[in-house]
Image (tube, rainbow, N blue to C red; front, side):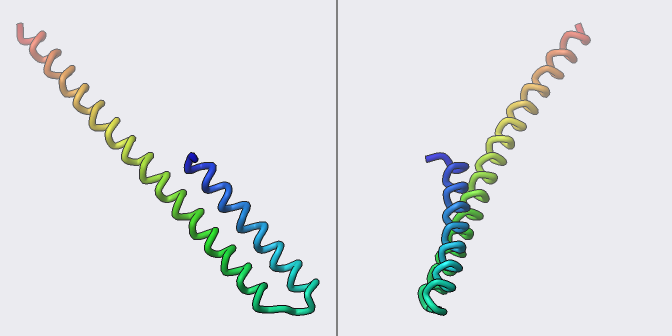
Length: 88
């Protein structure tokens, strides 16, 4: 599963848990234990969503760093070629 899909699943699961806990709280006659468990699970889902997004951004940054190094090396090679051609 892709990380973007994972992050969206965690996000929607947290929304559903919060709504479900709120509805249960008002329907059940102020049952606090189950409501708090739902809210804690929603917070866990939000934490997992943030962690997944952070990992996704780290991977993207690593790819960009590799590309930047590769392009810098190519530029250096081109400069050397141009300086050698101008010296001839």
